[in-house]
Length: 115
Image 1 (cartoon, rainbow, N blue to C red):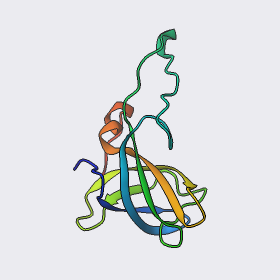
Image 2 (image 1 turned 135 degrees about the vertical axis):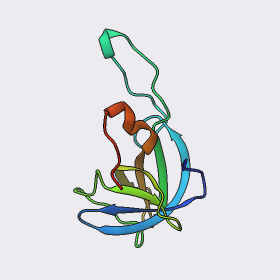
Image 3 (image 1 turned 45 degrees about the vertical axis):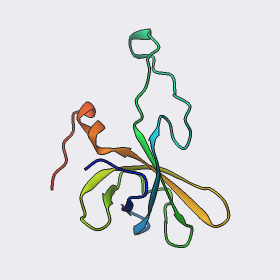
């Protein structure tokens, strides 16, 4: 399943447990922004992919703190896996933002998802 804007998702963090929000952007090239970080593989600058997804939710229901990174992100109603939790930040006083990497990029790391 591919992440889509408006999709309701949940994440599970080792510290905060399960919490949920909605996808607002699916084409981030870096944590929380559109700037592409330098890719210097073999000393050559390269383009990066739209690897990350931005999720937002009320700060009292979408939880994330240090120690939650690496946890699973999944579609809320079906439980279908979508990605791996990467980062979070407070967008404002009432909204939490969570960033996750898309599951399809796991193969580039040489890892597989065990169900």
